Amino acid sequence: MKIFAPNTTQTPNDLFDHWLPHLNEAELKVLLVIFRKTFGWHKMRDRISISQLTHYTGMGRKAVINAGLTLQQKGIILKEVIGQIGRQETYFELIINEISNNS
Image 1 (cartoon, rainbow, N blue to C red):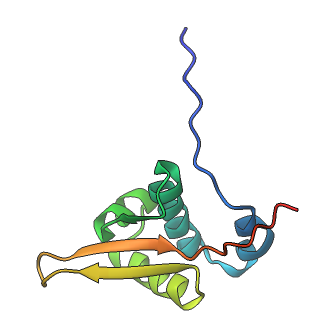
Image 2: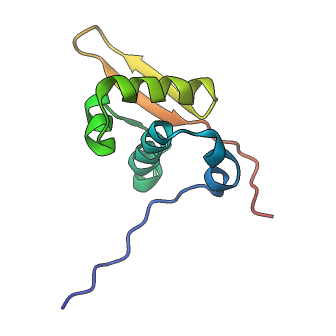
């Protein structure tokens, strides 16, 4: 039997230490997918479509959009839409505090 090589997606301790009690299930699911699509591939931002978020979270389009809006309002993520209607690309980025809490 083969052993799979370890692979992980870093998740900031701040998610558990601060944000978890303040997020509902939909927000948490969307945020975890954004972690996977960014930190999981060593990126700070990535193009993530609403359809990708619905696929990975198992939620409906409206629930994904609402969760994304509340995450923006809470100051956790940035969303940028680029391009003409019908050819738009949506980018999500985590708002990172550069001050480390590793002490």
